[in-house]
Image 1 (cartoon, one colour):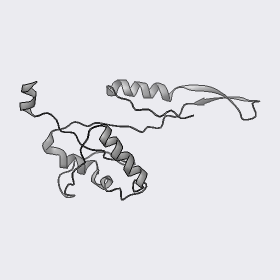
Image 2 (image 1 turned 90 degrees about the vertical axis):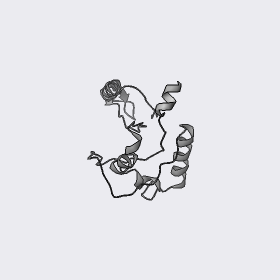
Image 3 (image 1 turned 45 degrees about the horizontal axis):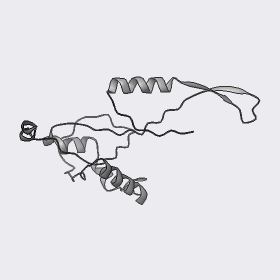
Image 4 (image 1 turned 60 degrees about the vertical axis):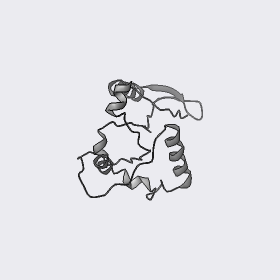
Length: 135
């Protein structure tokens, strides 16, 4: 059985939840029903993140996370039409704008993104200082 969910909260509490799920074990009968086993829950992350940073560093962040590569859906399996539609629907549901194209050459932050697939969903503008004063 699979339960798919999205979580949101402080990273410390998220990490504690993940640890507790990874350390949960369940009794399970064999297919024949003769034997009983104890199996560990298998947590497979599909995470939705919101990364907040100064507006003037958008290009640097996009280059560093290699998000530009994902925008065009060129690499498998993101090129599939239903995947593209899913990303568009999520973007709309979250009220995000499309990710702008950036120059591939430029400053990059050294990030450990090996073995990661990072799919850029969209961007959301922060409030300007004038907007904050109006609140």
